[in-house]
Amino acid sequence: MEPQSETTQSEREREETATTILARHLAQTFQAVSSPPAGADRNVVDEAERAGKAVERFVEALLEALAEGNTALQLTAETAAWLRQQPWVSDGSRFAPVILTGTLAQFHRYWLAEQTLAAFFDARVGIGANSQGLRKADIDPAETAPLDPEFRAAADAFALEAEKRTVIARALTLPVALLTGGPGTGKTTTLAWFLAAALRRHPELRIALAAPTGKAAQRMGEALTHVLPELPLSDAAKACLCALTPLTLHRLLGIGRRPEPSYHAQRPLPYDLVVVDEASMVDVLLLAKLVRALPATAQLLLIGDPNQLASVEAGNVLADLVARYPNCHLPLSRSHRFTAAIGAFADAVIAGNGDAAWQMLSPADEAVLRSLFASHEFPKDLPPLRLQPTAAELFAAIDRGFQSVLAHLAVAPNGSDFSSVAAYVRTLFARYRVFRLLSPLRHDRRYGVRALNARIAEHWHRAHRIPFVGTGAGRPILLGQPITIESNDYSLSLFNGDQGVVFPWLGTLFAWFLDADAPHGVRPVPLAQLPHWESAWALTVHKAQGSEFDAVLLVLPAETVTVATRELLYTAITRAKRGFVFWGTEDAFRAAVANRTVRVSGLGGAVVGSGASAR
Image 1 (tube, rainbow, N blue to C red):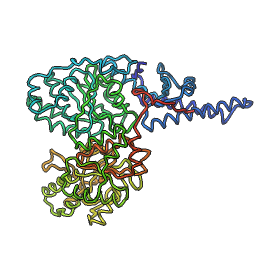
Image 2: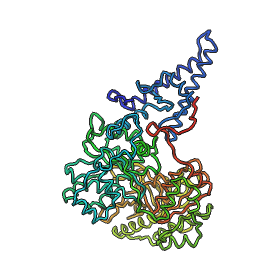
Image 3: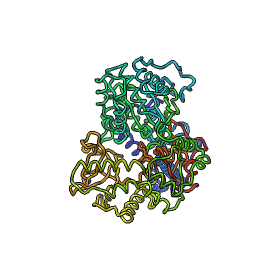
Image 4: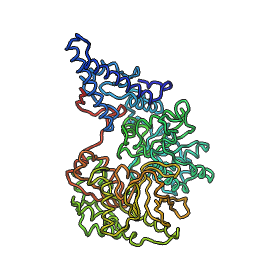
């Protein structure tokens, strides 16, 4: 079914129309039940009441599926047959609040977004609308762009791996490509060399770089800048590439206070190539907005790890696209980030092998942990470690993990010299990169990150005599407290996910942020001026996506059984470069490994099974 034109109404207006139609239907039904006309047949009234309740149950089930991250609801054949008789349901040939495709029901806006993506990919990679993608065996291996001799010589000098060269040569021929790989596989390095190859072929290429969050966009720019000097480009081309500022997708599309983008099908983006990093975090509605805004001749490159946590909003769009369109999938497999032991552990988890993964966790005694964090010299193949799931063991391990931070805070400067304070803060940032505490929970009263952060602050003040230096957002602030920004503030160049530390200077509390362009490498912002922030000794696994630490400690108590998943556990493990420590029960660990995230969508298909009845 071709997606309907949106030239007459915006998505928001269509959604409001859909809501109005459903609300009117329910209101009319319940009015007929509550105030039947005189002499009305009681059987007719009872039937109307049953019909109204059936509609209400269906809408509740569809909303519940959406809240769980699904863009669609799999129905039984009986429920689907009933639904086809409803006036507010369509097969997509006409507008209706709910679209039914076989036994898959969706709100119109999600159906339309997925239809838009399918039509875009089908047109770009030459697949029929009813196909689920070509097999890898159908791909012509000769369909790659030749890399010129100067490029190859520079790649040899850089020791660019053959896998990356093949991916680059293939990507140059594809109008849309999905570049995937786990942490440390070199996705950003591959992107940098791909951009160099593309610019060597087309020096006037107009490029846009984007990511779903401000922090991800910032990391993208920093990583590309690091690789830039090695690229086989002229100084002028390097300067142009260096001048590219990665944007959030919202800024790229011109989405501000109103949800409608400034760029769309009638006013396309002025670029020849659009690259989106951290694509696993992009939801289906936002990606549909992007592809509508692309010029007909523009190339799209989506980069991410489909094994990590899916987007917070509904959908699992990167994984769905990889499964549906394998002929434009460019996977990277070799990781350089973490040790072989952590890599094998992460592989066992993502494969769902709970027995093997649990056996890899070695019991950690106090001597091992003290040695581990005292020297910061992690053994080459240190196995993943597990602690006894007691509160005393947890907080003792937290202190060990942060002991270099505690030692640094004990010698905090009191002077007013900016350069000395800046140097101290830079070292504090380096100490915080050694270790971080992760939890899947945010609001749990014992093991959510808010509770853990509050307990750490109080414990450090009481046990280690780290002073409180003021208050912020109604909370006491500890000297050197790590924070994370929760919302974008473009006027301050602060973005959701930015990490800072609180430290006073000249009698004022400042939050300090690393900034390569600042004279001393750090930039102070008065704490009172910050957008919403949270303490960050402990981070949620979602918030930690894209970050890396020498070691992490994952808290997985019994309370996480219903929320912890295989993908969440994999994401937590792969934040660690050298050491991973697990605190929790064996049951909670095995339950997380067994609990695979499966989201129902029109792109990826439905869960195999009997289906859910909403009646």
